[in-house]
Length: 105
Image 1 (spheres, rainbow, N blue to C red):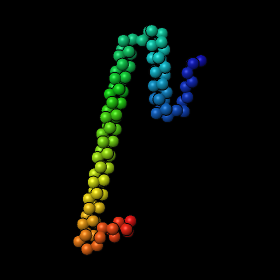
Image 2: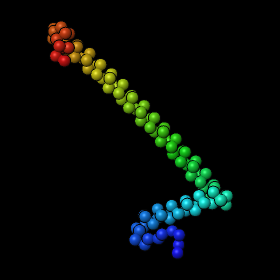
Image 3: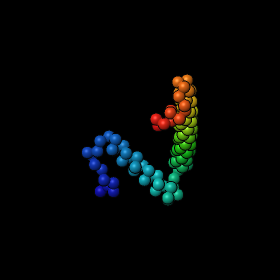
Image 4: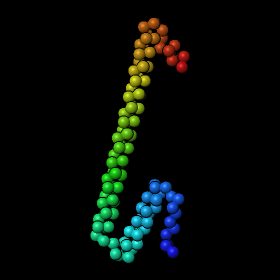
């Protein structure tokens, strides 16, 4: 009997995932036994470098997003300061002391 349990009721995605898992298991056995071909070694080295590139790109994008959020927060703070100045100016045009504007807070 085959050492791997085959189940015909698997859908195509599940079968594909199972085959990928078996291929990784087989590749791991070859690496552990020292029988991995140069093509297999190159394949996994290439996967590793692509993964590292993707992780670096992800980190760069996260940093960019964080910088944009910080810029947005700074912009919001500046708008709030301008709003306060406008309200103070409007209050002074009405002839009311500044304390009345802040007393309503």
